[in-house]
Image (cartoon, rainbow over the protein chains, first blue to last red):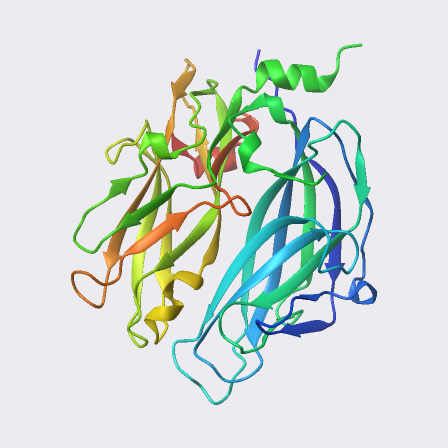
Length: 170
Length: 183
């Protein structure tokens, strides 16, 4: 008989205020103090997890297009922790408006797994960096909270073929 | 005591198409093209149980060669029932809309993440075993032939994937089933 095993929410990083700006020269992490919630997550061996990121994104100076990378890293407020997800957002307003800011919201999904045999307990960071163009971008809570949700999807072996689609968090 | 995850292993034999290196490019006027079966790192045969609803979550990266700077372009990304097919039953469809940069040098770095979830249901009385296809079709271009190609791709840090998960029964989720594509 078919049995439905529901997805289990593990927790969320949430920020309702704050912003970070970054250009292509350096990756910048969302400050720990700017999270309203920045829980520790425990990832178990053999299981896999969905990271669901939603945020608002815009540019700091007037520019028509700007590609950016939003990374999720292992650890708190870090630009050097293990990269567990890479999410791209290509900002475009279609014209070089002098008004500059035209925020867009976006959502992205990634998957992680524990590659070793020991549970991993860690906080998670969200970082920002632009690509190729030395123009700053901004992650902000303009339209909606910055939110990183973590869900336990169950045993990785229950989902055929999924293993290469999940990034190791250890 | 039997773990509920053991039950999940036995009862939820779903899975995912994944590639961390594969890419699929469509050109204006070139019609719909499917990611070849060999480009998937995994392309499992999935079993969709009778009377159940399932979610299909699509992830990956995409970009366009459009560098018009003024006029954009659009492509349709589809998930179809079957392997490497452009004619199988459509299970999900997403529109990728691109406003091109003014410089060709920016094209391949102007990546965007894809995040889309579709729902499908097996309204029949027998389980449906099938593989899944991903296809791409340019539906609006601005630069004519040779311009406005669209590419979806997977990287190790951002895999191209279609994850099929159980979402409950049709009977218990009639509203969800109402918006689901039939297998």
